[in-house]
Image 1 (cartoon, rainbow, N blue to C red):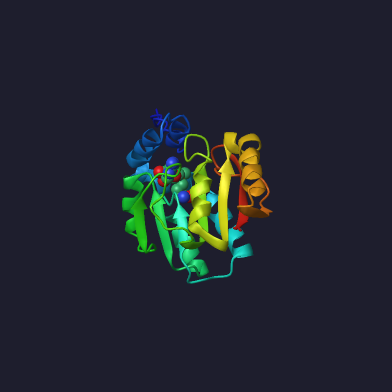
Image 2: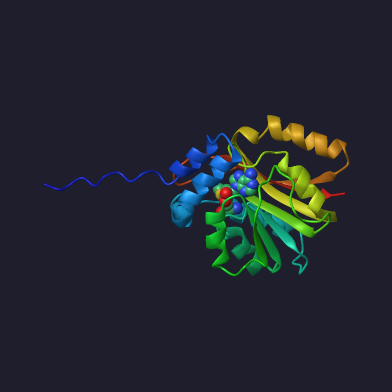
Length: 214
Ligand SMILES: C[S@@+](CC[C@H](N)C(=O)[O-])C[C@H]1O[C@@H](n2cnc3c(N)ncnc32)[C@H](O)[C@@H]1O
C-alpha cells in the first residue's frame, strides 16, 4: 500500500495571513517569519509582480545611474531584475527586517533601510529619479497614503511605477489617484492589463500603474 504524502500548506498561505493583518507591525511579523521560504514559495506560485513592474519601468524610463527607490523591496527580487536592466543604483526599504536580511545577501542595493510606508520616510525631498514597488500596495500591506511620501521623495519629472491589487483596485485606488492628480502632484502615464500575480496557485488580480511626478 502506498503511503499518502501529507499535503503541504499552500505557498500563498502566509500571503493570505498578511492580507488579514490588523497593523503594519503584524504584517512585518508575518514576513519576518516567512523570509527564509518566501522566494521558494513565490516561485512555486509563478509570482509575476516583479516582472510586470520591471516591464513597465523598461517601457517608460531609460536605463539610468540616478538613484532608484524600491519601496517594499522584500528579499530583493525586483532589485535583481532592475540591476540587470541597467538601473544599478537602487535603495531598498521594507517593513520586515527579516526580508531585508535576505535582500542584503544579494548585493544589488546601495542601501537597505527598515521603514514603513504610511509613515514619514527618512529620505530628503526629490531623492530619487524612479520609485518602484512590487506586491506592496495591497490589502493588509502598505496603505495607499504611503504614495504621498513616495511622491515627495521622487524628483520632478521622475517616475513612480507600482502594482495595485485586490481590494485597493478600482474604488480606493481610483479615489487616491484622483486626489493626487487633482492636486497636480503627478500625471498618469500608463497602466498594464489586469494580470494574476500568482497564476499557478491562486487568483490575485492586479495592475501595474506608471505616473510621472510633477
Ligand atoms: C509580497 S511582498 C513583495 C516583496 C518584493 N517587492 C517582491 O516583489 O518580491 C510584500 C512586501 O511588502 C512589505 N511591506 C508590507 N507592508 C509594508 C509597509 N507598510 N511598509 C513597507 N513595507 C511593507 C513586506 O514586508 C514584504 O516584504
